[in-house]
Amino acid sequence: PEGLEKKLVYGKRGGYCFEMNGLFCEEAKAMGIEIYGVQARVAMAPGAFGAHSHRMNLATVDGQRYVCDVGFGGDCFVDPLKLEIGLEQTTHGTTYRIVKGERVQYSVQIFKDGAFTDLLGFDDIPAIPADFDLSNFYTNCNPSSGFRNFIMLNRFTETGRYSMMNTMFTVYDGDRQERKLLKWEEVPEVLKTYFGLDAAPDHEPAPMPVRR
Image 1 (cartoon, rainbow, N blue to C red):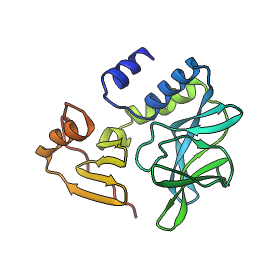
Image 2: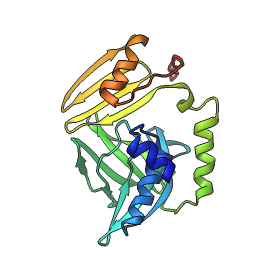
Image 3: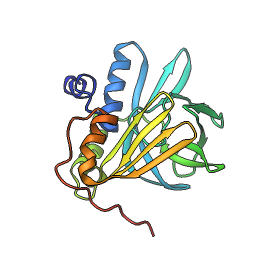
């Protein structure tokens, strides 16, 4: 936890789910909040989920259960979601709901393009550290892992977020979206200006895979 706190809080380096949700969980426990981590699956398509490659947290405050996730990025919810089946909840301009799933116990769905679609799936089973060790090792070390091949950044603002996938930089501001395909030499300045990262990747990212 000390190393994560130095990196994420004081170094402002950012991180991914196992780091950010792991530190969030430990800090919440220190505040007396009842909370534990669970393994989660990212939705590949409606009703279809991948392996346990994500970590999230379940917390209880004043008898109310919440789903907490500060490390998914992209379209993920900013504020905790109440763990209530079918309840539509809007945070940061986006609406979500939690439903019972067929392949997972619960599915967090996002309202997009006029319909709800699966985002994350999870089971309400407290994970042990070894569960996260395995998933973390794969995402961090496997040559085919997206975290080893692609640039993926996300930073929320008061009215939207900044997002970067490889060299595609997107600004979300309310209902407005602006996209720009960066030249490689423009990447360091964007990282510094919009993400607070005074560093640049040492090699260009791999081409994005094409879904067939």
